Length: 310
Image (cartoon, rainbow, N blue to C red; front, side):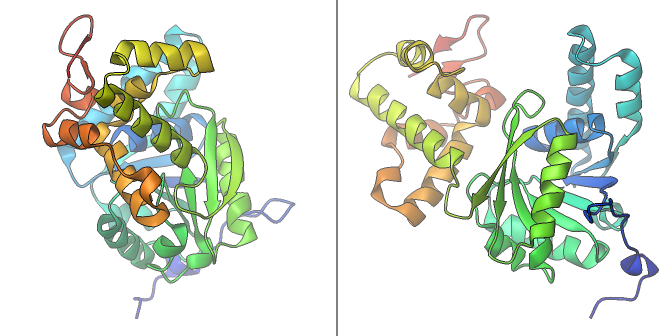
């Protein structure tokens, strides 16, 4: 049984349309996605706490976010006053339970591991006020299953942001089996305040974007394995021939080849053989070539002009 708390009895403000006004947002996980979500949330006017159990990770996230603010000012995306105001809305914490105790919305951005997510959602369900909504930034996993880890599945939804968060315009919103219409509207309104377009997707493994992206990235690795072309030529063909902003290898290195492999493994288990990971991709991950975050993936980022590692 939950301990009694006056905070648990608190209610959010409502708009004239009956949608709760979200003021306090907590982002859990200070990796590439979490720090990006925290940035756009602060710029969108929310009071934001970025939470991570590792102090070093929080320090790295703060440094990265400061860099994003600086570039935004340089590119005239934000004025110095706007950036200063947004920075003032953003704090950092390694105390998860304390941070979510005053939240209106919690956005989870931890690794794509169901056991980690289960642990996080069970903890925040106990600590967050009853009116608080929960969103998972998953690219493949079931918001229905994640909602089952809580006592409020109707308030659980998936908000799939894209990397880099501050530049990519879309948030894919996926409702679970128990997700209420109100929760969907809250997610849409929050995303809009962050400056994002949204699509509403019914739950199915991989949703829309991850199914297509994973298949293209996997097929590119099969072509590389078969000697169809070099990584540079395959990327160039996809960019110029299909008008993609990035080639599949550039994108894979950016999001992390381990993340791409995890997604493919999940889709292979749930959707069948067409998503079986390419052996060459598995080899890259086993060798530690995970992409930009490790300095080497398909391309070598330790060199001034990224050479190819095969």
